[in-house]
Image 1: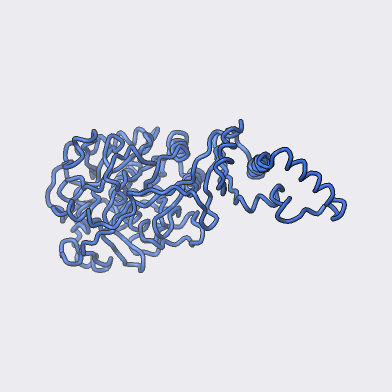
Image 2: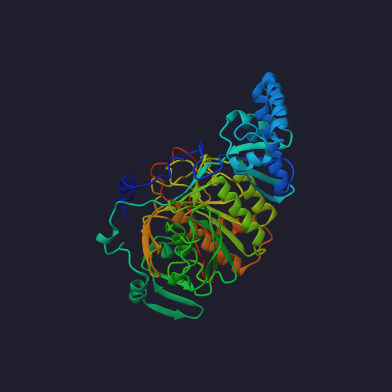
Length: 464
């Protein structure tokens, strides 16, 4: 659509502004402590509590500390060693634990973290000085990368959203051996199968595409009851407080449908595993993301597992480390959205990590829309504007939305198909195959070419 650049300015999106969590809401951790050596939960918690106790005592000063000990000795005689609430309780492990809301996570001997509510910046500085602490990082906010346009697609028959049942009725299927020719339910499915821009109303697909591959969608959840998944989507884990495992925002269902839906999907027989790390507003934290990646590492099927991360946020050393661990040590490919900040993807996480596969957006005219992040960290572009897929609110609900969140699952789906066809020694081999398949010099960068180097490569799927 030629009006994409104009309409973009009207989009409602919160994806450009990224917030750091300096306060605490609903007991949400403010910081995450990365320890130098592995500790179990009890030891890790005791370590933080002991340091907080030592720090708190140091703030009292020698005179206050002496007076406190003297008063405690007197009160012990009078009150049978009972501590006075509001005075001594804050220095006991029992008193500190619930107030700090500690939560620890250990993957292996090289990765142990403890998150908690630490509102005192001086205590953070104190922790930095401890020899068992590698570093402390703010528990930052990450957002789903979808745009909700003010443009009413229902006004245009070519872009009008239909229910799943309506789409099935209007589509025509022609079986041709192992492949099927059909009317494309969305232009993106047609475009990734063309070397040059042509008719976007038809496409050819393999009904068994992606079979045997497990795709973990770390998002707002997935509407597993949607007809398009045919029972291939399940809820694996939920790390969002105050929400159940169901998708209450729609973003995760849309992404999963584009990866592996029977109608809207690229890899139509892949298995979808929902790992809920974003709330209904599409917001999640560093801690949520770390827990989600850890879960995948623990349950991954070797050589047949992929991760889709359609989110973006501030740079994070913690996120970089755990994603690198997943890719390099556990051989799990990770596909991430470039971001919708109209900026350089290298400025954000996880898109800046060199070990993930970062995907930007294109439109139906082979132009990179103005919202899409670009730059040398983006390996490939895929259809991201006017993308229709499954949604929440019913078993046949659909929605058209825009964003690099919609581009990324196209490539995740292609990767799932490649994994179902071939065994890869390592993740880099899969990434190289994807890049080699991509169509070079197919895209137009209207605003970004002069600002930053771009990888001019459009996603491509070859049916065999």
